[in-house]
Image 1 (cartoon, rainbow, N blue to C red):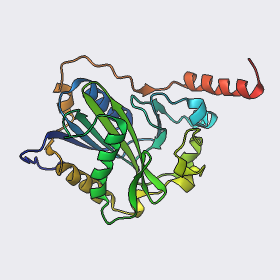
Image 2: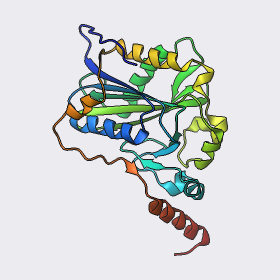
Image 3: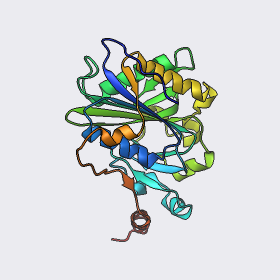
Image 4: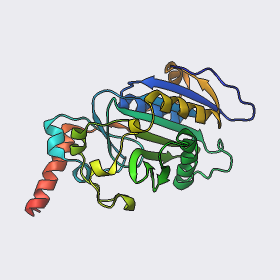
Length: 266
């Protein structure tokens, strides 16, 4: 579904692409390409992805974050993305929203992680106005003290990207693939996954959330809807993505290293 082009005089131009079920690896490749090669501003909304997939931050260590034996046994794909942030398992019940902006696009916004997080939370405050106890808590979007949105960022010389995975719903069984991270927000209080997260579907219809997010973006940007083909022509710069699947060999090696540590082997 595409929204009509909006020309709001005085607001910076932003290209909007909306997808349904775009594979998460393809989405991340598009985002990385736009961050590295495009001189324009972009918003990407992807309503769900395909098969369950684990997505790790650029510096994430599988042995510390994943139940690797279960991941390998069940053949769950694992992606290392190009941005920082934590680890999440995503599927058709996850909604993704991404903003890619030139540093000068948002007036008075300093291109650093905390100001960007603060800016994004102010935008989502418009989406969730009057719904639940929404706020930004550390780097998470929460209702009360339960997380439903995880964020990741990357900041380059001229641009920044802020993308969010919203838990519209989730399969309880999939959470068993993720370990309790060693570095966790203080408000988590060592709670397990199921005591820590909540479902967005309990607060708002899926289509309402997506439409309100686009409307909120339209209060800060002049939106222009584009199709996927626009990415191909946005730049002539050669691009090779760093985001990729981890191989079974890499995961098995990480699992073996854990076993050796547990056995006290050198």
